[in-house]
Length: 84
Image (cartoon, rainbow, N blue to C red):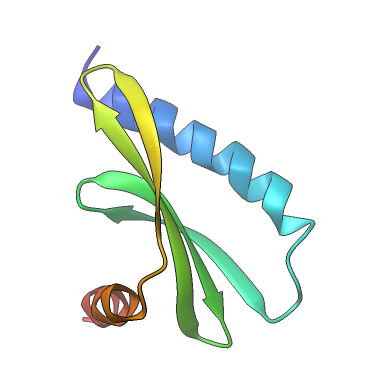
């Protein structure tokens, strides 16, 4: 399986999660799908502040994990990186 198809499968998984969550998040939350460290991730902003990230961990042809990023320092760094 090529890297593109692996990435595409991961995006589809995130898209399904994204659609499910869209119906459950409050109005001031914004969800988006971005590439973080070379893999797709689901980001949640609350009033333009990055609040959490769910990043897929990919290994070979498989999705082997889902990592959450909640550390405020890491989120601030990531938000800064995404804005530049």
